Amino acid sequence: MQQSVSCSRGATINNAMRLGLKTIVYATSIFCPTPTSSFSITSRTFAQDRHQNATFTGESASSLAHLASSPERFAASLNMTIEQVDEAINARKLASTTLNEQLIAIEEDNKQNMTAAEIGRQKHRMICQHRFNHFRNAFVCKKCWTFTPICVCHLFGQRERSDMDSDNKAQLPNGVEKLIVWTHHDEYGRTSNTGSLLPLGLQQTSILMKGLLEHEQIMNELLCRKNVTPVVLWPDKKSKRASTTISDLKRIIADNSSGNQSESSNHGGIVLISIEGTWNTARKMVNKLPPHVLRLDLSDEIRLNFTTPEMNEGIFIDNSVTAAGETSQSPSAPSLLSPLRRQGKGAKQDNVSTLEATIVALLALGLSVDEASFILNCARRKVKRIQEYTGKIYARD
Image (tube, rainbow, N blue to C red; front, side, top):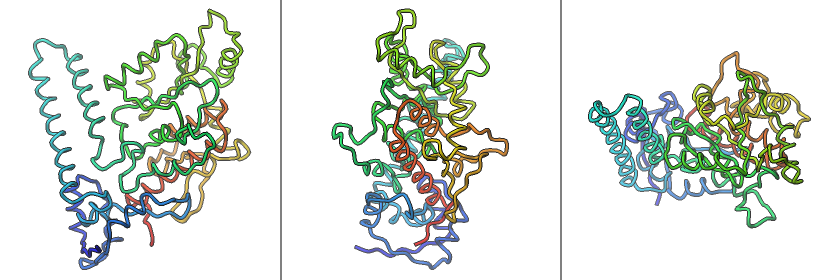
């Protein structure tokens, strides 16, 4: 049944506040030009748009301002009723209020029997558990970390493979046993994140949150295994020891496959660790890893992939797409994530997203260009959808 609803700038902002969403005020002038403008909508429209066989070009997304201008429209985009939306909003508000009360209580109740450091660690674990359970927003996909109305999970199902047991995911290169996306709690669930897409496109890939007890146990058990070689994608520039290179990893993999490794080398299958967080938080996370974790320097590989069209068929070159559809190949901002997270004028060449750095490493170790290109294109689609949805790029019908 078709419904007609009216919207205004004030209604859009009020509904956005009710939904617990951030909206761009000036976007309302595009989608709500007059107080009497009206829109028509059906619930089926959004369901079809979310699950259609979308291509990587010419695809539009509904805007947040457009959806937030009407409770009915927003609920339909989620395949929910208005009552269900309100329940989800209230449940998250209650969880946040409860967390704040618990954080205050734990500090007041334990001043005498716990040190400040112990109280801080306890509070940190509570915050991590809250973020894991409730994300940053009530209406974000738990898998791709994209706003639910513009979820991109289905894009990964469009890849056809002959191996029916692969769960439609690419295999990691030979010698790479596992990929871990080690994530800071403040990054977990962030919609502008790309590392969340790696488990959707790659087998044996997991996202673990630092500070979440069960995830830290998994990570510690993995790092303590004697038959693996953990490698973090982070250069060791300040330490006296040399960083590990791709050539070093290839030698380890070759030794493992041939059975020529010595007892003293103690190398096993490679476990790649990608760090997800801001530069400052990521640096701290890396510094807290055990000393036996190798540090991989990808500076040369990143520079070549982002400046040389002939390298891996130039799949990293066309990353930044403007509103007019023109491509930007500026070497100062090569990352596909730069439209959502702009870097300063002095940005370094190797300041790329977690997903891109990981794909660079996997390509060097044997991942096919076709598989890498497919994952990169899915990430580009996510970035473009979020741009359109949040009002940075306005979708035109």
